[in-house]
Amino acid sequence: MGIDPERRSSDREREGRANEGRSGRDHECALFDLDGTLINTEARSMAMWQLLLDKHDVKQDVRVFMGRRGRDVIPEVFPGHDVEELIREVYGYNDHPELPEIVPVPGAAELVRKVAAYGSPIGLVTSAGRAWAELRLEQVGVRELIREIVAAEDVAVGKPDPAGFLLGAERLGADPADCVVFEDSLAGIAAAKAAGMRCVGVATSHAGDELAQADLVVADLTAVDWPPFT
Picture 1 (cartoon, helix red, strand yellow):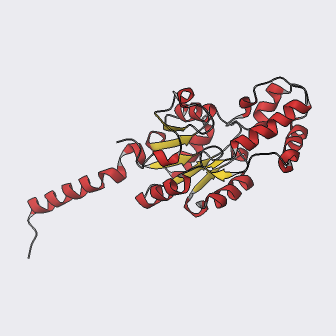
Picture 2 (cartoon, rainbow, N blue to C red):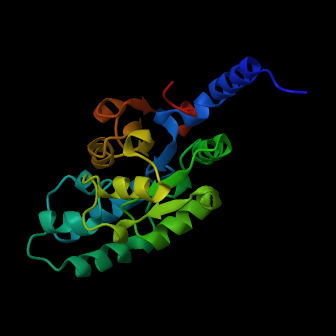
């Protein structure tokens, strides 16, 4: 028996409406920052950088390192010093007994799993190295759900430059306008906006009102759904 063309057209329209939420431009893919966004490492990282500043008697707001690659910040804060030597020195503080504990951000694993279940591709764009990213994603429990990782060594210039997010979108085969970024740092939010992406600011490292450049600000990842913009 044949199918009525008008009924077939109507069925296609209903199917299109049903799938509209899965193909809308605001949530085709998610790009997550790592430190401070998926896992609470920022307090520990800032404590390590503060030890370095104190050791060299440098008066500087330690938050200048937040969300950025250390090798990009060191020449600004320690002009004339050997960058690699100072990076080795700050990593040497990793076993300091008074450093804060590393724990996942509340709601991190649940949100990543929700995005994956929705069918949206997921990337990670971090100022940290790849080995660190792999380790921390395993700790959060979502490594297998992250399709692409853009780490510090993958870009010539780190955040607030948009290169990392643009590369993440390219690797996922997505238009930047179709990407939603999750970020806790001012540098990361600036990078996301410069890349032409929507951004959810996660107020784990800064007060919420400091993240005004983001399109949406949440206290942690329990406070956001997917898709976040409807």
